[in-house]
Length: 378
Ligand SMILES: Cc1cc2nc3c(=O)[nH]c(=O)nc-3n(C[C@H](O)[C@H](O)[C@H](O)COP(=O)(O)OP(=O)(O)OC[C@H]3O[C@@H](n4cnc5c(N)ncnc54)[C@H](O)[C@@H]3O)c2cc1C
Picture 1: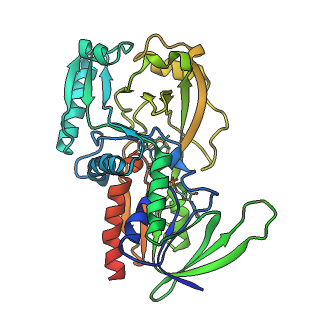
Picture 2: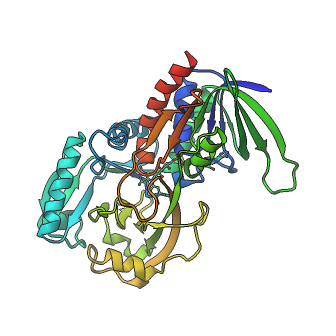
Picture 3: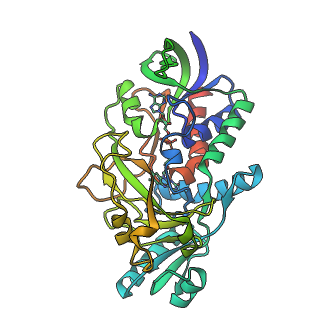
């Protein structure tokens, strides 16, 4: 049986950020990812936006880790040559009522420590985004965009350089808490390619659950049944290349009052394409990315109030991603990130409900996890 100081379950952006951070401090770190490559879950099926932190309740983990993570991510990307753009964004209002909502959003952002927020008028919106229709907008200068794929590769490379072992095609199937460790059983090589899968157990002094959509199932393997993750699909369309000139940077509507999503927005990617989305709909299964996809007309309808020129013929369906929500269908509200040592298995650290802004917050989340791991390992 292998022995480890730390086993991280899940190789998305959060698991990789954690692997990089803990491997700076401890030896014998393993990361276990069931897919053939790192980052194939939510981490590369998102908008790639480095959020500012304006939306979340003051004092929440989402607010604190997003604002800190935004700053850390901009610095990290610049230092390690991860493609990113510090482009800012506009949240647009169409009438007086929405203008008041913009003010509230700005106040919330300031309470969270977001700097440089200001309301601008229609002419200023037009100067930045000539095709956008709005009465006014909230300008958010600290919002940016990042290549999640490159970020994950860089974090993984740094973790490996620090001596961590990153295993892919390896599924954690059982967790057995012992007196001074947790036995982590994994099945390796179950790739459906005819090769015989092999089972192995690693005895870990500390286990970190970064399993995204499946984090509730990993918690349950430790006997903790208090979490349930509800999958919420977000679908994207893309503007056809000939129409990508319609958007220069990032343009958002006001967020949905139900807290489910930030609303269908317009994102110019680092590659010059323009994403329209994501939508937000509960789905029954955690891997249901494609069944009953919405038609392009639906995206056109939602984007038209911001971008009146958009037509269905300008759109083609793109990818979708699935959010790990803690709020059940039919309930409004924002659940906070859960980042805690398990009440009954104190050698386990649970990261549950790491939905948006998880990409932005990843480096700050990793710092928080290092503090919890230090309680266990020192
Ligand atoms: C549509 C959409 C848009 C978003 N937009 C943004 C945005 O613009 N900005 C932002 O900051 N955030 C955004 N997010 C949120 C962000 O993508 C997530 O918060 C972040 O990717 C979570 O990373 P993760 O590592 O926790 O999860 P994941 O990337 O899902 O990684 C979890 C990993 O665990 C693995 N795993 C699960 N079970 C096991 C097991 N038993 N054994 C081994 N491995 C296992 C999975 O295969 C997976 O790779 C968005 C999310 C969605 C869905």
